[in-house]
Each structure stands twice: as structure tokens, then as C-alpha cells.
Image 1 (tube, rainbow, N blue to C red):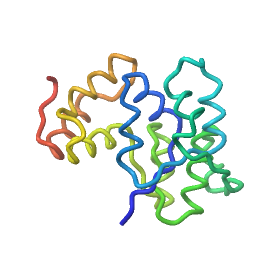
Image 2 (cartoon, rainbow, N blue to C red):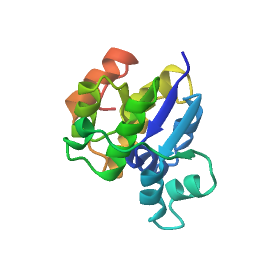
Image 3 (cartoon, rainbow, N blue to C red):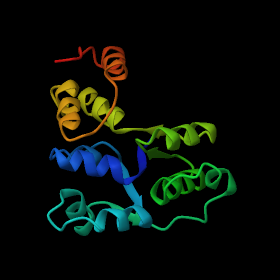
Image 4 (cartoon, rainbow, N blue to C red):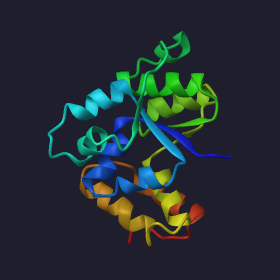
Length: 165
């Protein structure tokens, strides 16, 4: 089955901060962002790598349907709401989200969801990076937060790496 992703801003932004936005482009067969997410990213500095990715049309920008009540009820931000509304309306798309509440919403609506850590683990499994733990550590130095226990369990379960390095 094809990997088709609709991404929120945070995975693009945090991976761009460490110069690894390429992982979001290399892993799926197709990646898109909602117009609301593009606007959020384009509000950043022209030197921002995530903005450059959007400005250079490296990701498709899509219009999203009006959010259904079961998405609106969660009170999420505009980007998360747009990602989930699109994924709910378009069969087979995976939502790429880091926000815990947005991920809970996705699961409650049976929307396939992955976060930045899952993207990194996939990259390791496909041989695009030599160490998932090193990439996650780089993310943490930029302010990306995920607790150590979650990282340790994910790495051990999926790629056999240990945490901390």
C-alpha cells in the first residue's frame, strides 16, 4: 500500500531545524500539507528551511474540506484541524502530527497517524539514516520534547537501539 501523508507544521519545522527535512520527502510516496499549515510555515523567516521547502513547492499544498463537528469538538489549532479534516475525508492518507491531543483525536476517528519519531524510525528501517537515536537526540537539542521512556521503548521495540546514546 502506498504511503501518502498529510503533515502538520511541527514535523516539517523540527526536521528542518536539524537539516533532515529530506526524510519527510523521501519516505512517503506522496506528501502534502494543508493551506493553513503552509500559511503557518510561510509566516516564518525566509531563511527558515521549512519555509524554503514550502516556497520551493517541494510539498503539495492542498485545500481541505470544512472541518466536521467531531474534529472541531477537540479544539485543536488550525493546522491540526486541517490535517485531520483532510485525512478523515481522504481514504488512505496518514496524518503526520506531534501534538498529543491531535493524535488522540486521530485515533478516536480511526485516522492513521504518525509522529516525527515514527518518521525517524521508518528512516532507520529503510536505511536512510544510520542511527535513529542520534537524530532524536539532535531534535531534542532544538527544543523538541518527547520523554525518555517513550523514546527508549520505541527504539528498543522497532530498531533495536538503546537510549540514551
